[in-house]
Length: 424
Image (cartoon, rainbow, N blue to C red; front, side):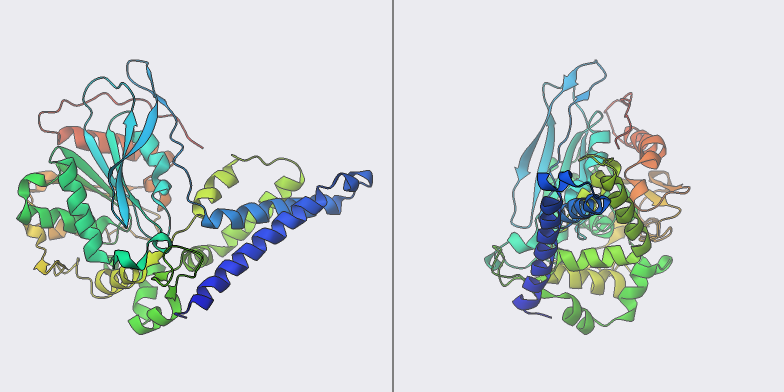
């Protein structure tokens, strides 16, 4: 599999399906077709519309498109995105609200590098902007990074987080979502020894695999059922000549997307069938529920091969985090060194990716942290996505998170939370 030909073959298949959809849509839209009304042409047009959009979105990084918000004084604040730290594999970006009065606490949102872009946290960012100066780790697509930039594995990821935390300073609250949870915990422990004053005030870990074996899922079972050699042969490919990262070994985003969809293939098939029916009836729009979700879900990015393989081997197979045996830059990370950073765990009862218990295992590692600085919440009925976006997040988890931050903000006064409206 480790050939440019296989990488380009997938891109060729995607490009061909996009072209077929565009062709069908254009053909069925000819004015001539209206002279002889035929329901079959409506179906062809609808299929083409949905197919073209679906395959086109797979190679496009979504925009943040953060709307303005109304603060507690009733003033509208326009939001701009600024790059604070620029690195080859990822940037630290800041969502700046114009002319904001008063000081808001800093919040670092650590986005996953697990196939989707950081924009997956768009709704989370929108919901938190009224209460925080929000910063996000904006990871880059590996296919666009030249081979000359070097490698990027779990240790490099952890050191990026260390540098980002140092940049923001100690008066920062950190929230890690899904995949980066164990590495964010490791970065905090790394700072506890190297530069204790740079540690954040609080750390909120949302649905991540600290101990994947605490409650195995289909994801963890797959990690144990294949060898590293099989993974490397089956999943790793070289970036083709079309992109700046030509020759770089990656786990392709299109291959990851196929895995995502296969986990709930029936649900996705039904969703696209229903969308074609709605398109044939003229009931679709650019920002309907289906397109809003799938424009983000289908936008995938390549991961460096060393990051993907080291994640599977060290986090899932060897459980280095769970066993407190993780090494970064030649130094063993000791989680017991975290003694004054408040830690909150958030899990979803119906999470089938990082099941309840996997993230909660972090609290057992923090033997040096007083119990009063530990907290945990299990959200009833919530799936993986629901614990950081959607109704469960807005109505239950976000208010609890604000209370947790306010209780651990030192001399910062607790704030009255702004109301967050539903974002469909």
